[in-house]
Length: 252
Image (cartoon, rainbow, N blue to C red):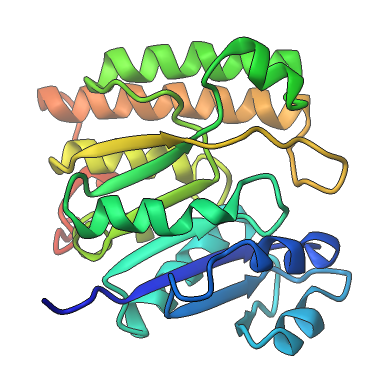
């Protein structure tokens, strides 16, 4: 049986202080390549990534979190990935779990897999997750599970894995370049009939970890709800949203 090609992608911004630690946790025999896309960092992220032997892509201007992921996925596809694992290089997620995510996808137990940081309220808060983020995460995840017909532990993880077919099928290039890209992406996978799953990962909140502030979190939450509305309208045929149209769809 042929082995799937596993590529890890890292959307990076000012990750110099945590990149090496994140990379060192990935079992060396579990991935074929690590691609780091730098979104105009102001520290030494790029230089360090090159010294560590990563494939490095540098943006000429800051494209935002969603825009960074778009470059990540384009590069992974061009490099022949069968499985793509996205992990933030800020050490918030346990990279030792990369081969486990890849294993579920390779065995075709699911097409999309997320790292679930919220096994219990006590663990999430003890790991440093701010109370307002915990409550917002719980509330949005409950709504998303009900709205999209899923049963995920959380919808807002920065550790995700996809089979190549997912990236080939859904129109992620039409998504926002901002943080709501993630919510749009998962709604798209449901719309196109892919199977979602998750596995538990430890919670790590620290000053070095990237995190959006309260106002940006509120904006993200509202845009996530808007995405769910667009999903429902598209599903019922009342409004056809471009982000839920097939890739070969052309607006007339």
